[in-house]
Every structure is written in C-alpha cells, then in structure tokens.
Amino acid sequence: MRTRTISSEPSLEVDVAAIDPAVDAARSLEPVVDTARSLEPLVLSLVVLAIASVGVGSWWVVRWFRRPPGVHLQRLLGEYDDVAVLMHPNPDPDAMACAMGVADIAAAVGTDTTLQYAGEIRHQENRAFRTVLDVDLESIEASSQLAADAVVLVDHNTPRGFAGSQSIEPIAVVDHHPGNGTGTEFTDVRTAYGAASTILVEYLDELDATVDPDAEAALEVSDELATGLLYGVLSDTNHLTNGCSSAEFDACATLFPGIDEDLLDRIANPQVSDDVLQIKATAITEKRVEGPFAVCDVGELSNVDAIPQAADELMQLEGVTAVVVYGEHDGTIHLSGRSRDDRVHMGETLRHAVSDIPMANAGGHARMGGGQVSVDHMEGIGPSEGISGVEFEDRLFSALAGER
Image (cartoon, rainbow, N blue to C red; front, side, top):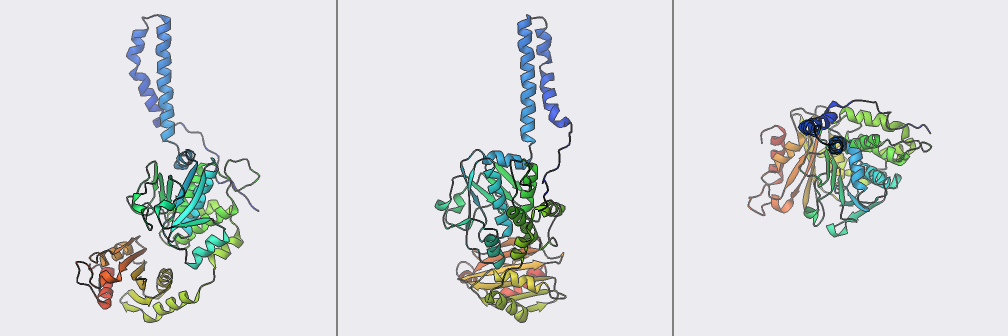
C-alpha cells in the first residue's frame, strides 16, 4: 500500500506579531528598571525576574491563541472523558466522515466518543457508506439519549431534529453551512468550503497525522477514514464540480495515497431500490417546464431521499438550468432544488417560495437547497387562507424567475 504523511515538515519562521506583546510588556517596565538601578542588588534581581516572567508569559499567551484550530480542538476534546459527536438529521457521507475524523482525533488523547444522529439513514449511498466503512452510529429521538453532556456538532451548527434539541449547547461546532450556531468553547464554520470533511483533513494535517502504520505518529489515519473523508468531499461537491474551493482539491490530493479503492467503489456505486427509480422516472416524465426552469410534483412517496436524487436527474436535461422536485411523505411536503444558473440562488429561491406559509422552512446554498412544508398548513390551517398545488407550483416558478 502506498503511504504518505499528511503533514509536511514545518518551516522555521519568525513571527513578529507574536513577539511584539512581549516587547511591549518589557518596555512598560523600563521606568521600574531605572528606579531599581539605585536599589540593592537583591531588589534589582527581583525586578529583572519580574520582567522575564512577563515576557515569557506574554509569549505563551500569544503562542496559545495562535495554535491552529486542529490543535485547539484536540486539546479541548482531551479535557473530557466522554463526548457525543452529533451529526445532522439523516446524515450524509460528509457528516459521517466528519464524525469519524473527530472520533479519531479524540481517541488520540484518550477521549471516548459516541457518534449519534436523529432521523434515518435511507439514501442508498448513505447506507452503503455506513455499511462498507463499518461506522458505528447511534440513532436518538430526544436529548436525554445523548451519550455525554459534552456535545460536538459536525456538518451543521444548530442542533435539530429531536426532542429537546433547542436546549443543547455544544462545546464545539465544525461546519461549512451558513448559520448562527456556535460552540461554547470552539467554533469553526467555513462557508466558503464545499465540504466539512475538508476541514477535518486540515485538522489532521495540523496534528501531524499519517497514513503510514509504520511511522511514529500519535495519530494514524486508517484506510477507512481516508476513504470516508475523500468521499465526504466528493459527495458534497458533486465530485468536485459544484460549490468547491481550492481547499477541496488540496484535501483530495492529501487523502489520495491513503484511500482503499475497493471501499471507494462499493460506496460510490450502491444498488438502487425500485422506489427510487420510480420517483426518478416520474420526475422525468411528469415535469413541468417553463423556459430554463423545471418543477415536478412526484406525489406521495415512502423514501424522501428519492427527491434530491430525482432533482439531480432533472438537472441533466438539456436547456434546463434550475429545477425543484417535491413530494409528500407523512403529512409533509419535502422540496429539493438544484441550480447551475447564476441568476438563481436555490437556497434563497426556496426560502422565498414558502416564506408566507405557516410552519414552513427552506434554505440552502446557491447551487442546492431544500425545505419542508406542512400539508395542513399549506391547505389553510393557521392564519393563511391556503394555496392549491397549482398555485404552489406557480409560486415556485415565480421564485425561480426572481419575481418573489
């Protein structure tokens, strides 16, 4: 197996900004030194010792705050015996890979972790990721089921999807999605990144991790973790074609020597269930197209993960630049949108489309978005008068055209 150390040798640099605080502290004591020159040698020695202590203390303070985020996170995790690593509801490969990375970083300092999530893992790609890489995950329905008081959020910055989620105050947040959620001790949200897995790769680099089992390193990156992180990046950026930054390309190059190609192939090419194929077929044959936009109601369905897959299929249509697919499951309408049109910010488009429907929510990135609408509220429960299915589609097209 080809191996490669994830981090390169650090270069020697003189950080002037880090030295300045110590110099300023020393200068502030110059009057004291002038006075001490006329005093006894013992007093002068004490003054000199005080100056040295201030200088060294200032250097250590600056050095602490200038440590890279991966080192900060590992030190924080090392302060706890047990940590719950919480993924967003219905976690995808990016979320699961991040959780795996945090778990390995914590294990290197003796901290036990439990990887948890709300909802279900239904998408065939997500199920394959979990099964092939043998990821140990626990499902929760309430905050009381969290494995530890210390919670780390990955791939989302606000706890959601389970009873009592609003009461959770995570100690750390690692994410790439927009939002205002923060950790009480550590927050690293990089909205310019295409995947949260990229952030974890950088943490491993900062911690001098290695994929070489014979190398002397405190943290070894297994084939499973390297493969998982690589696929986390690929899945969230549509194979490096959508919403990625240069950091994603760097992360993939870093991980490549450590991946297992057989594991990667099994995750990337899972079998597809009949109901998913049926939903895709419905989206293709029943779509409504107006100009460069396509919208389709695929009706009631048992697997909501088929909706974003159907949206991906519609995006392959020639002449179509933005699509929205929606369907009903258990009294809720689930929406998924895709855009390659610079005029259409899909997250904002969906948010505007459902903004005046009570209890509805939607959002996302420029290229992809999603949302949920209560069927009862759309039909008129609450302060609104309700809207029909045709009216709902009309407002989707209006939002896509920038008219809402």
